[in-house]
Picture (cartoon, helix red, strand yellow):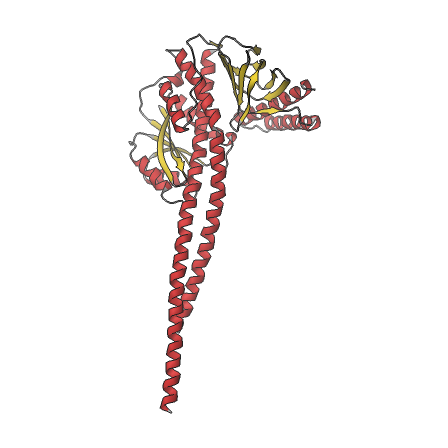
Length: 291
Length: 137
């Protein structure tokens, strides 16, 4: 009976698949731990930077540096942080749902193959696409930040915003849109940062003394650039933590599904085998009776 | 009254202690920050930071970044910071030579300006390590 052989081959195939998904789950787990650690270790830096910018915000009512002034928005500039690889559940799908809400005049810059594919498929205005390695360093994202800043300086885009997947916990990741430039509402920015990192440390109390800053415009521009760089870096790290945990969960359920499929198939196989044996015995005994 | 000094890089909090005073290399020259210093924000250059606390004197090498002094708190954010007192002098010398060589190479081979700047920063940081190492004896 060919049936048992077919089932045996299928069981083998499913077992192989389970092995692969289990390996991917392990890899994602270890990568997720690393990504979470590096996302966490960047936080004190981000907080301190935000606090310094916050100090300046308190100090100067009128900041004339162009990064701090809102201008009429013709084209929003949106950086989309997606993944290069698939097999991570609904992560990219959720991200793209967020993108579809954005109006057509916006211009996009993408990180990761998935986003650039989606954007060209939906005929959005894609300025550039980048890719970042796993465990990126500050130097790896330098190009991206410089490109965004240049576009902003040249007036091709009037805001710098980031759509990324924020990491809430291993089972929950949610797409989120954050506006980085212009820095025209610094107080709420600092506040948001504190709530995002769930830090209970309040910023260092400031009285209203005058601050000595030499070359104010240069310092402000450099601080703003550093802030942009730091934030984009941090958001990429967080997206990667999300990606790996989403993949881990997806692969875990794939492994579990493969396991239950194997159980079902084994049951079927045994049943078919038993049926074949019974059939044979019947035939033999029928043959001996007839003699 | 001591001041609180905090040195933070993207990777970690390098230093967070109470100190007596600290000398920081800014683009406008070295400044010595003691308690009750006027509030100040400035850019820092790659160089050596001298930290003096009650027990000891410490010298760190830092890259570029910012320093903020407000009240009795001094915060330094920088791309890299390193305690070099335990580093081997020869290793540092070699690193300086390597950084300089790759900078020269980059200039010759028409590299991207941004890349050259990066190499320059690296070379300066290596030099800062060397100076800091010498000073810490």
